[in-house]
Length: 279
Picture 1 (cartoon, rainbow, N blue to C red):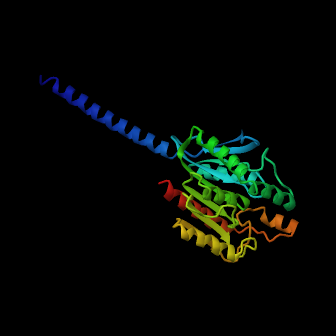
Picture 2: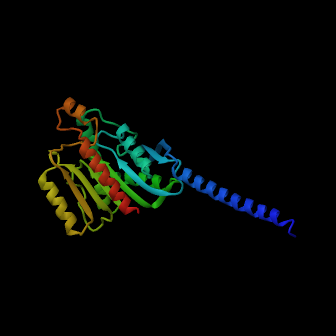
Picture 3: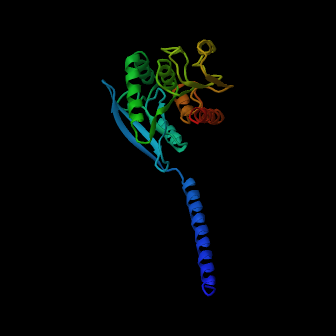
């Protein structure tokens, strides 16, 4: 028996070393998995309400496992364009599945403020159709394989912010809503149907948003005990999140201007809200 003791000791030692190596390999594998970089997949999608064909865009991180919250993004009055798709990609990098929606139909875009105003008015003056188009996007997002259908938010810019707020005030089943450089005089003002937490980020010098309208909006939100934050950036004008704002302002003689600081601060505020709502 004594002859075999060294061999048994050596075998036991090899087993211990092997186990340590396996544990180290498992640990290294976990670290690699946690450090996988996002791989954003963006794809054009076609969907429809009962009366309108719609063209949107869905973005998500292919390397992220499991289901995640979904976020709808509603475009400015210019229509569904590259800007709203870029925002979808940005949200996908944060770990959400995002759909850039189409509220005009057929991916229609405006090249002049006159047309943009007409397109926007056609949506806001026909609330049943606006709801139908919004709900069609909600259904498409909820059905996506990466989305937790019970966790939804909506954000919007300019016209899109007003749409997002109006849908929330109309009882849409949303956990959070954010509006950027958005009017707050809405077809449906805040009421007891509002379920979402709300963030509004506007320029303090935005001539399209009057102080009176802000006061009325805040009063309505306070009257129902809504959970919300209204942020005003001093000296900042309309369309402050869009890098195309300066060119559009100069071209059409409109008080528009990009503001990098307000853009970043508002994006940070959005992230904070979504992190808290979906934690």
